[in-house]
Length: 315
Ligand SMILES: [Zn+2]
Image (cartoon, rainbow, N blue to C red; front, top):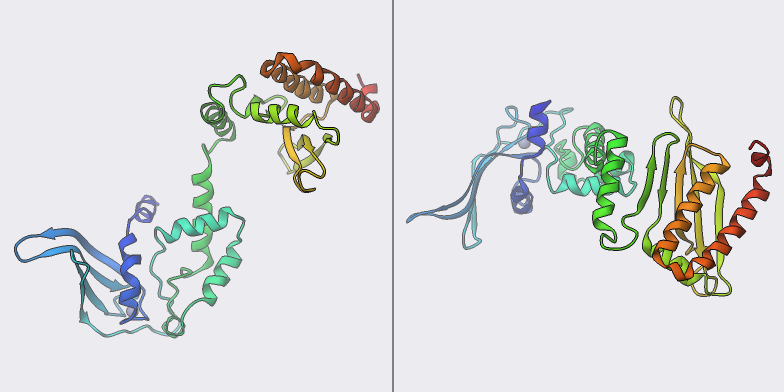
């Protein structure tokens, strides 16, 4: 396992640069690097790069060559064995390395499925690659792409543990978002019991205040919570959002979230706490305009009480 991780970090970016040239002579093999030296300069040589290439189908496929690229950009390919032999039914594939690995991770991060990426890359194989059972672009099976996808997910996590990752994200935002302002960061509160995350920024408070001065502003408050996670053996998470839009000025789709809360608690007290925290931070940003928010929040609370009269009865 350790070897696999070590291998996946091998930097063969230069191979992807020289491959299109080599492919003009050998369109069939899954070429891999055996050894490579950079920058050999003496009286006889002025070499930028020297490497030996072999086929991933070795030892059955004995093709071998050396590539020498000079400092002047010129190059030589010396083929020491020209035989290409790929038995039927045996897939030939070079390992997928950087920068292709990063490109794939980006595609997966943007929502592409392993199935679709595999099919697309499969379709793009050349006639020669198909004839030679060459699967350089996809790997020998979809599992290779699955592994790259999960690698990408693991790399994107700040920590393997959710609580630790959230704490790191909190710190990251504190450092990067409005670090010198009155309201720092974006995550304003994290609690575990109840599981609750409250998010807004100083910019979102200021935008809210600016837009509220317009007459036709539409304030949209999802205080009932939409389910964003409902799994067996884990807590049900709800998403609450206060958003704003200005018809005629911004397009209909441009509903801007001002603050949101993710919570596993669906009680009035939690919703009130969220808005109270927003209201408090608003007053910190500008104490002179806090009266406006005060009247708005009173209005919101009245709506909340009407909407949640059944919940209210419990209290
Ligand atoms: Zn070969």
